[in-house]
Amino acid sequence: YSQTWFRWFDAGDLQGIEHLIKIVAICKLTPATNHWLPTKEYGVIRQYKRLHGDFPANLVVRPSAPMVDGDPIDLGLPSSVVSRHRDYSEIAHLCPAKEQGGKCRDCRACWLASVKVTNYPAH
Image 1 (cartoon, rainbow, N blue to C red):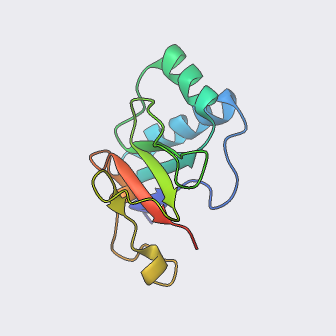
Image 2: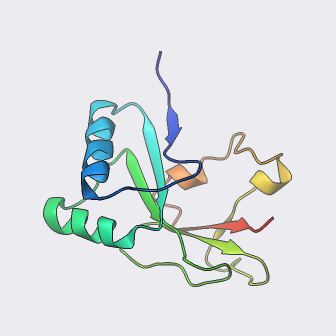
């Protein structure tokens, strides 16, 4: 059995630097799996990068903006925003899940480092 796409945390977040180090270790042990880690733990991300450098190529750590309609977080990584009234169409990929029963279906934008900002419409 192999899983091609894996999202960390449907609800919840990193518990600290040791937690992130363990996630990175799992990613390194599963190179055929693409991992996506949404998080608001900016300090943990900064600490990891300072101590260990870049994340593995199969792990996209995507810091989430702290507020609805807020600016994307710039930590040198792909990021995400949640929109209610703000138009992010110039800078962000619009997540289709709201129109797909809350499911990604064949969209994999969040797992791609080349997608710099993903916009999740509030619901």
